[in-house]
Length: 405
Image (cartoon, rainbow, N blue to C red):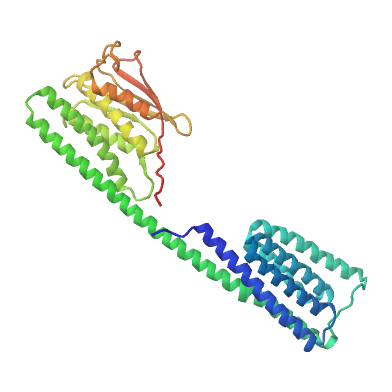
């Protein structure tokens, strides 16, 4: 099921709102103009303004079907309402005319459309109201009140009804409908997010189970092999599979929707597993972790976990002999927004400096350097320290998955 585009839905709501306001204001202007002539005995410019506004705005609304430019249609309607409101206001009592409320409707319509238009029409209409007030204070008497004395209460009543109807009956009702549509849309989006989160957790759960099955098969295979060297190779492969399974297990247990791994508990759990796997439950290995609460993507943690797996496994197998006491060190610090520096090492016997990934037949050593390149980083050995120490600089990798429509 494809979700409706949020921006298109909002645009459609604005189009419907503006067109309905135009239709209703055209109709009410015609009725108001007729009432002014036949019931309130108001002659001259006031009913003509109502009829003129209705005619021009009708043409404006009709032309929208041709050019489909909502901004043009809205601004023409707003300027017409503003001009008509000012003309009727100054010819029906000036600052005391109830028809001045129409200017507030123009401002309200501006904010409904966009914040920019709302601010613009707010400033313009405040200036116009101030100008009408100053005009009344000056008592220039350039325009007379065209509303007869006996009709002024009815004119005031109808002006307020006109404003209340447009604000409440048209704007309010349609804004409420738009709000319900937005609420419905957000509810649908939230339901889809929850559905995808459940599916994603299920995927991680199944991947973890599959990797654990592979690990169990490798464990059984290693026990069935009499050759100690081959058994050791199979055991190393099992540890690599476990290091990846731990990532999916941690993602499965997360309560939020972020595909990020808390690095410290992952590294701690991985190191403890490797120590038990290689040295047994009773050992003299001390693991020193200096890793802050960083959260990294799954695309970063899996190769990083494999690098840790290889270095720690090599340290436990070849660096710290037998039941000797030893120390494993892992530290991590952030260099920039996406760049990190990790130090990994042990205080064991180390290995010769002339052994490199190019000269060594060790799969683990080659894997370490290849994984460092996968992380867009570099890894180098520090020959100054006792044992085997590496400095790894890497970048957080976030692979973007493109949606398929």
